[in-house]
Amino acid sequence: MIQLIVLLGLLFASSTVSAVGADFDGAKVITYFGYASTIELTNSSVKVVLCPEVGGRVLEYSLKGKNSLYLSDAEKSWKPGDPPQGSAGRFDIGPELVIPQRKILWSGAWKGEIIGPRHARLTSPDDSSTGTRLVRDFVLDASTTKLSCTQTIHNISNSTTEWCHWSRTFAVGKGICLIPLTQPSRFPNSYVMYEEGSLINMKPEDPNIRVRDGFVEILKAPRKPKLGFDSYAGAIAYLAPNDLLFLKRFQTFPDRVYNEAAGLTVSVWYPDGDMIELEAIGPRERLQPGESASFTEEWWLAELKYPENSEADLNALKAAMEQLK
Image 1 (spheres, rainbow, N blue to C red):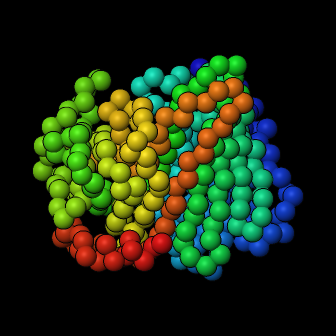
Image 2: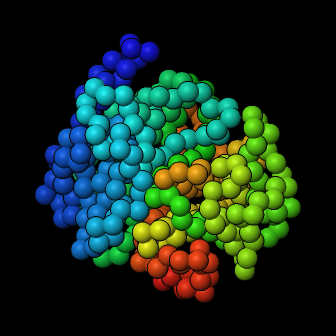
Image 3: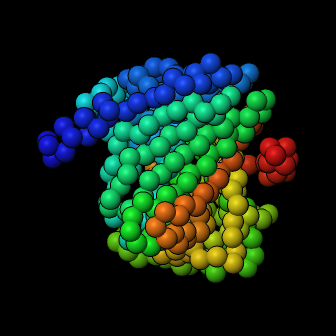
């Protein structure tokens, strides 16, 4: 374990951020807590901070100084050589139950580049365990809260790979998560719950989860934290206690194979703690050697008052979602 930590520390130290294009509008290299090579994208009201040093993540996505993402205390005190941290805006590839361990992708040092106005690219090292190189492009709109997050999976191996996009975004916890539904669903209650071990409960019931007016609402931490959905609406809405609406939008593909165990398009992990994980899942990408495939999430923020009685105003939510386009 000690040797692993030392090796990871050396990997972190090798992280580089290109200064090429550093004079582009709304994009620059900054120091953020213990990270010396983060990239900041900004417009008049939104700030995005990207972290190439540990796993190619988003550390901040904020509106008017209010961060929608959960940063752990250990993350805020991190320094080069420390064990890797993994809070805030994480991305990954799946499917979860069969993909090999991939520490170099998850927590290794990535390359960071400023590409253009409010546009940065993070590139992973090559990972032999999955035969993959990942490239993540982040583009902040010039005037709105829209952050385009595109992950490209490159097959660098000599054989076929079959992975999928899997985002694992930690947002500020203890809010209300809403998944818009489409019909029909394969699941009797429009969602599944992961029980102990590998058991997936196809007909769960939980007092903190309900279906109302076209949404599954997760009002607070359920009996078991990991939930799955097969909706093709291509959206996750999250109303946080800090009065921010965090919206993810993404394309879905009803005629393609989703290779998570339960064929999920969305997953939510909601423990009884300070964060919630909002997971958009892409379809299986069957790639031949040298081929690549991309998946894009659009992130949006809006100010929306968190209800004191935890009863979300769905009309206000729908109106806000319509405006975030």
